[in-house]
Figure 1 (cartoon, rainbow, N blue to C red):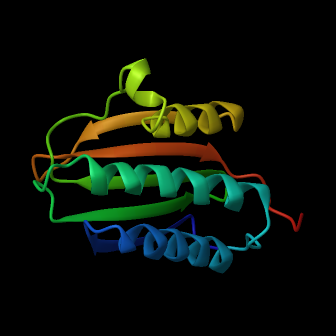
Figure 2 (cartoon, one colour):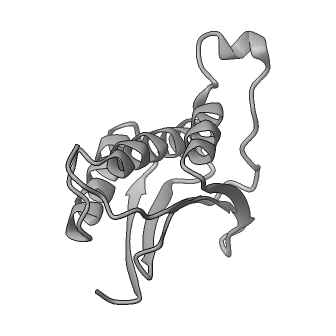
Length: 143
């Protein structure tokens, strides 16, 4: 296997793109040896779902597309990033709003921490940002 494998897809900022992004990432992980039911796949599927949903819902029409990128480095580290062109960093919503929604980042941060990973937000070249989740890659097995 190569030292670094990468895959990315750019999709329209539309609700239907959430499922397409999830499927794309799950397929990439399968190509890299992670069976669909593996813990890392389940975790990454949920992380991608939450990050892409945020990109679709919270960019206020300022990001007509978003890009999901995945990278496996030396079969040790898995990086998942969602890039949009909206300059505002993701933020937690007030508790009153969170009763109906707004828990996406809490879920992502929790899953990332439980997996021994890292959550970061970095500026992107398009004036927007990339939300990165970096996780240790443990040789995935069937559940």
